[in-house]
Image 1 (tube, rainbow, N blue to C red):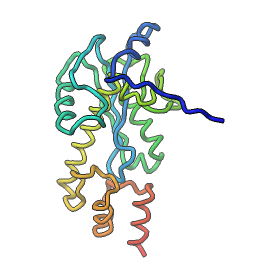
Image 2: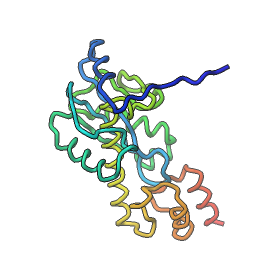
Image 3: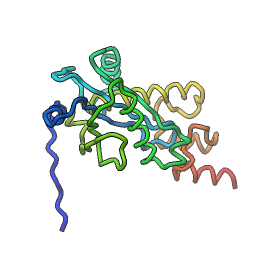
Image 4: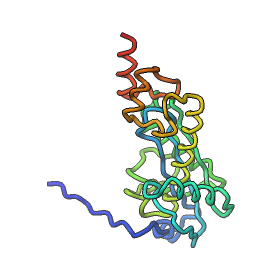
Length: 217
């Protein structure tokens, strides 16, 4: 009989995981998170972040726990801080359709980690383990709520992708990408029914495929 494993979540993310990795002999430890697995359109985005030991940024937390305005402020602060190493990477819609969303997400994560100014010797990755990751890694379930560098990565990935979808909305105003960021809301599905799909829709996702098939009949 299986038993649920309780994961203790601190009041706010801290650097316990990073410090443990440094104490074990690592020289550069990054946190990695992604945004955009679930939407029907747009790329999946990953960010990798290396924070200096003792780093503090008031309010930094799992991006899902923050308002859009707070995420934007933290995003700008992280980008402007030269003491923070960071890299944001994508896997395209074409790669998602070719590889599947999980493998494309892992590809974006690897690109982000390898794009850092200093290649890390330990990557703390939010969620489940990533098979065949190109660098040493350790997964952390609910890592964005526990680990400060993963929380920072979650903010960078989320805001970057939201801004990307806002730019798409300027090209395709009838789809409302600025409101739903590509997720399968009723308004989005109605727009696909009415206008068809764009080159930025994930054709391998069942709702998109079903709508396209109905339009082709």
